[in-house]
Image 1 (cartoon, rainbow, N blue to C red):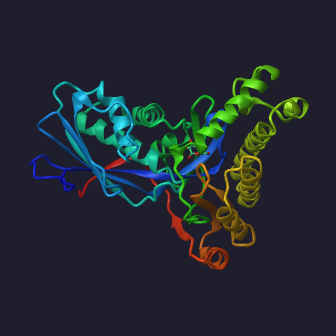
Image 2: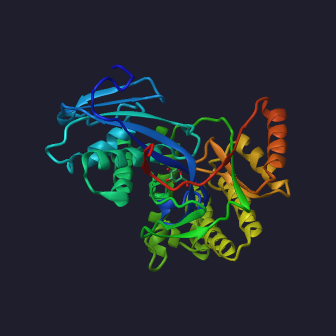
Image 3: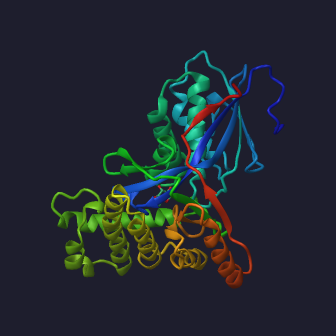
Length: 381
Ligand code: GLA
């Protein structure tokens, strides 16, 4: 297929959906726990143009494969190509399409690194849902984009992801963290003043494949731990509800791996509630310390870190300019997110890059991210 958008006379519309970093509540969303992510100003750009026939075509700057299919006979099985993500969303929303609407050409690009823990998958999925909603006049709104993104990624791509990423992307608010309770999907916002705190992301350059199994394995381990512990905890219906005393009493009857996974979840739930209280009081120093503790727990108990990420977090913890930091996203590589005193980012850059080059012989990526207002159509007017 021609990777240009072609020569149809229909206008091309342009859409944007951000990526996200998660600051507190690591690997809690699929355990029903609280999380505090925020959207970033990098994301996915989507050009969309109506077609006169019933075909859908997808191309991207992200990968060479292209999709060219009839809307009535779309592939029903993921192929492993990048377009599985938007295709899964399209399949979710197809039933809502008015009969009068025809096909679409969709072209994807953007400035979000893939597989770096910045939720390129939720960004492309929510962005696709937005584009389809507005091009086809579905009227599903943000709730519909978030649900289609989630169902597309779980049902079609096959990643058993929690609800955090599409919520963080869909309900973004600049200068704020999203406080999301993943047990019931309720959310509110906590201010994080960009004049005081910068969000720094350092990329370890270690790539990981989210769908490749390690993430799903953690989901399965937590499920197995919950199956054992929930009947022993009155009123509990997800691992988030299990308390430390129950683990202390019954943990030794579990596989040691499941004990460690549960210990992370219990401590991380507690840290996330504490962080919310600290942030509400304006105590970013105390909240930052919790991020470093969280990383240690992700390294030791959840076992999703790698030496490159550990070194970057050590560099964060060593400097007065930094409040705290930890790996963001699923782990197994990808990025560290740090909260840094505004205007002092260079001090962290110098230390982190110096240490990283000395140990690994290459530069880590370093970027200061701004917040974002969320998925939207872009226009010149
Ligand atoms: C990935 C998943 C999220 C969440 C994080 C870990 O990014 O997509 O749903 O589970 O890992 O916090």
